[in-house]
Image 1: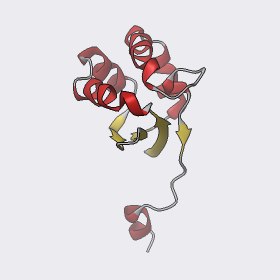
Image 2: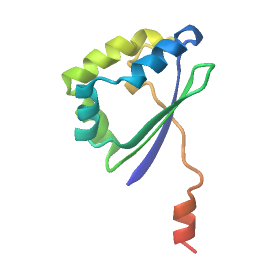
Image 3: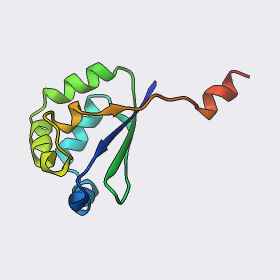
Length: 111
């Protein structure tokens, strides 16, 4: 299973709205994420709007392509678009991926 970490930036005056939206994600969006292979998915949000996301996947390209084909993702991306600092792409296409440099379990397993 591959671990993925990404960052995005929410506008400072949209932090509370973004937090509220993620406190009650639409049920059909939750199902779509699960069904397209997003596992152990978490989003972290700093007060200044920095978003760090983490999930595990077998195939990132398939996850992204699967979500792109769902109607709920199109609605979600539209609903979230105004929260992010200017980007011409929907948020799920504008991820800035952060490379993993350490994992405790991996290193312990390799001893």
